[in-house]
Image (cartoon, rainbow, N blue to C red; front, side, top):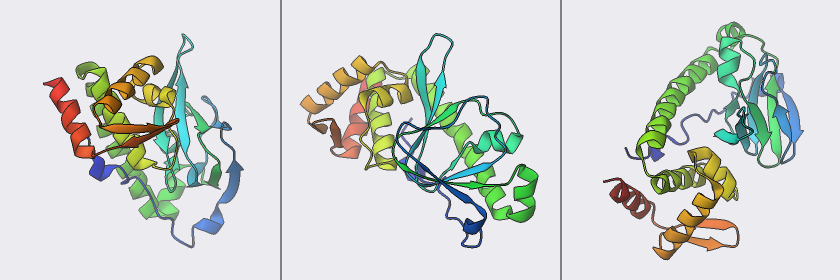
Length: 216
């Protein structure tokens, strides 16, 4: 399976000008909890700026990074659409601003902003495809291949954020030390460069070819 880079930004949504005043701006700092698992989802949340991670804590205390949302993305829309409490915790990965709309039900959105409801429905369809692909990757791919594709995805989607080894590992189901070893190998192969904690990617197609050859 090849990484679908062409669709990395499909879930972005440019808000109609007349919709923006209906929301309330909320500033956040890196590390802030924007909502907790189990909180009510009766509000529609949009990221004006910054990066938000969706995190789940398992029963054994292991923290997993499930999703990443950047500028012009909606957060927590699946729970909102089906009127369920949030199934994970939203954590700020950088400073930024949210725009919170007072809609409490999906029916309100459908009635008042039908184009937004259609966009959310399409996001859910894409999310299902991505979840299926990630499950296939975790069960059928070598860990270094998953790390490579995660690097490309995260760096393409949020190029200005300095991703940590831990965050990369949480996103693709790898231990932090495994990510560190993989990065060292990729650097020796000339496929990436490391400048301090910053990871700079070389040629994207060469990285993908390297990953695919490992899985043959």
